[in-house]
Image 1 (cartoon, rainbow, N blue to C red):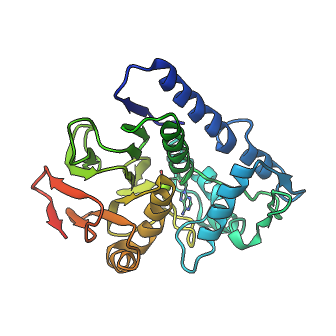
Image 2 (cartoon, rainbow, N blue to C red):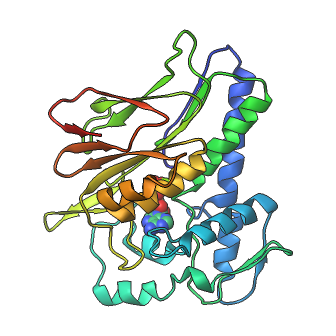
Amino acid sequence: MGSPILLKLFEDNPTLASQVFGLIKQQENLFTVNRAESEVMAINQAAGRHPVVVSAPVFALISVAHAVSILPDSAFNFTIGPVVKRWKIGFQGREVPPAAEIEALLRLTDPHQVVLDAEQHSVFLPLPGMEIDLGAIAKGYIADVVQAFLRQQGVAQALINLGGNVQTLGSPPHQPQGWGIGLKKPFGRDDELLGTLQVQGKSVVTSGIYERYFERDGRCWHHIFDPRTGYPLDNELLSVTVIADRSLDGDIYTTLLYGMGVEQGLAYLAGQPDIDAVFVTRDRQIICSPARHFRFSQLDFSWQLRH
Ligand code: AMP
Ligand code: MG
């Protein structure tokens, strides 16, 4: 997955643990675009040529990604692949690509052009060079699959962390207040926390510009792109954390809220009673939406907390 995986169980059950890791591997094999073969790669390789029939879960996730991508003013675009590949951030990318190249690649990122056939479960990218990238939501989707599997196995208390996508079941033993999930200090060491979020049976998903980036010309070029420009999103945010029932929703909303910024994001969340968020900004503020499903305990008081 290119990111560490943590599973917490409160029973000594190595078989269950290895089943979970097997499940993650199997799911990843459906969605990856970083290796030779996957269902998503098959769609990308057939771009400009023919539709590709995929499995029901892959079709369902692509349909969700498509719907979110065509929302008005959406910062989420599941056809951002050509831009992501060109920048190579988090892989070998260290250079800002020429503007003309970015411009040309942007023409291959119109989500409206993707043809979905719900009866055939087929996906067609009409232009050669178009590429689907589900990197923004695959981990959230897989975290939910793991949660459902554990629940089905009768597990009542567990935590899974897929590289920043945390999904939980219940609360840990003897901790009725719930799981304490660390909010990382942007660009800090792994053990440097701004605070912790307490949740029960909720998912906590963070997207931050410090996860994958390179520095050049005094700027941080990171891995969350503005689909309107083809450049990394440039606003007041360092990270967005979303608290939601489903990790997939958390993963979708972190990207959407990133594009909105703090003020518009807070206004938007006022109409979303099931979604909470914590914004961390460049001017050292931690801004919590009116907390409905979590409690925040601050640890680093050199940052200003706003509710
Ligand atoms: P996350 O780690 O969940 O914040 O997702 C970041 C990943 O999502 C990137 O590494 C890209 O693969 C992909 N991505 C980047 N920008 C966008 C965007 N605007 N819409 C959808 N996916 C994106
Ligand atoms: Mg995401």
